[in-house]
Image (cartoon, rainbow, N blue to C red; front, side, top):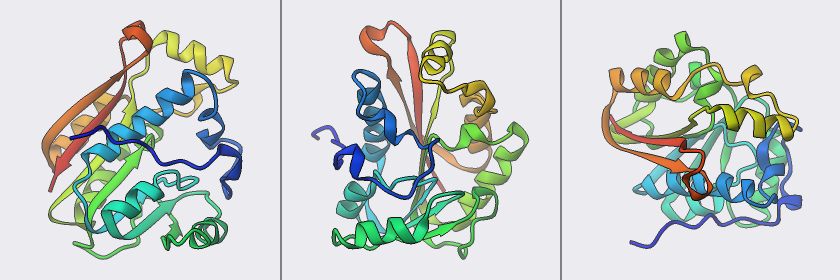
Amino acid sequence: MEPTRLKMLPVREYVGVNRDDPIRFYALPVIGGLYRRRIELCLGELMGGERILEIGFGSGVTFFNLHDKYREIYGLDLTADVARIEGFFKSRSIYPTLRNGSVLQIPYDDNSFDAVLLISILEHLQPEDQLKAFQEIKRVLKPGGQVVYGVPIERPLMVFLFRLLQTDIRQQHFSTERDVFAAASRELTLRRKLQLYGPLHLLGAIYQVSHFIK
């Protein structure tokens, strides 16, 4: 199987997100490649089907790829400008159904989705909220459905690099990859776990992608 490649427009074209959205990093050398690769690892785990829910869809950077695998794309995000992003993709013949809301209270019926995707979202929750998040994810998944999530593995050098980008990850990341994995393992069955390494492996593993089944 060939590696998944992220289908992206030029960064300047994306709309509907606030200044904290990482879309601005994708055009940077080295770091931009790492941002794309973490998404590609997540997308590569998705098996396709009828309906997918992406929680924390941001700018919709995954939507071109998701459109190739699923008949219907749904999205939930705390702050994204839903109407603007829907219009942006509809003009490109992709018709996502987007809402504002939280993973802690997913506004969809039980057994609704073949897959739930979360990329760099769960680390922003407090550790005590992780189990509730996965209970909600499990509830909206169809039997046999999959959840694929990616979370950073925080390392001291990574904290320093983010400070160079004027981002203090310690003010945004409250759960570790271990917190997230422990909660997921209580509710769902692990299929596979992958790790992304920094350039030349100098930073060690910096990102973890996990694939669970209901």
